[in-house]
Amino acid sequence: MMALTLRALCDSGPCDSGPCQTGSPVITSAGTYPTWSYFVRGHGCREIEVDYASATGHLAPDLGALAAAAVREGARVVYLANPDNPSGHLHRDADVLALRDALPDDCTLVLDEAYHDFRDDAWAPAASAVWPGVIRLRTFSKAHGLAGLRVGYAIAPPETLAVLMKVRIHYAVSSLALAAAETLLADPEETREHVAAVIQRREALAGWLAAQGAEVLPSATNFVAVRLDSAERAAAVHRRLLDEGTLIHRPAHPALGHLLRISALDDALVPGRLDAVAEALNA
Image (cartoon, rainbow, N blue to C red; front, side, top):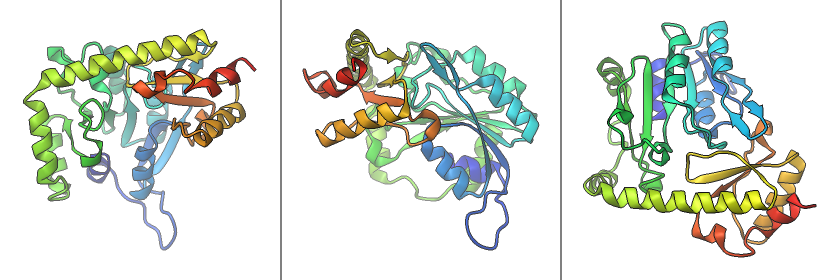
């Protein structure tokens, strides 16, 4: 869906050889979900990154900076993950809509809602509203557990969906993926129970990390983000955990190299599993 939105909304930049990034300007938060940037660069767009808003207990895409950059650069697309990956921050719908209103008239907000199901209001009637000027991307990869099948959908105005349909890749979603998605949609209560269990584990994990002295960022996702005092310390902890066979995520982008993102799995709550994190915090 990400590649599809760029194909529909942006022009590719001309080039004779090597990477081409002279096409339509696209605004992105520096260090957010990296796959988006892969598609932006692959399409030949010119990506402009803006820093996260950062304070004690707070790390989030800076909506004001995104809007200002879009106006300054004449952007065609602004990307926002909400809830964010990797910080876990959730912006209120009112703030997201204010961002949309601050964008140029010919600029589209691509709203990545991969973790939407973990919001407290995910099942509210207004949760799937169509917003003019916004393409809301949803996936079955997170709460529904179908990551390997690569199936998702978009919520957007009819005229926008018509443009997306014109340039979509035919047969991009297999019949197996469609059947799996339809099965899950037919039993929403199972998804709700799974999400509730994940949230319970997330809160337990966040509480344990906080008790070790960690700066645990608020999360509306299926993971917890911990901010360490330096990228070097985060890299050392990450390396030790990998050597011990514990897989967690550390963002590759240098702007967020001081974060560790820990999924809310049962295994994360096993005593001793995250001792490396606790030792680093108390060093």
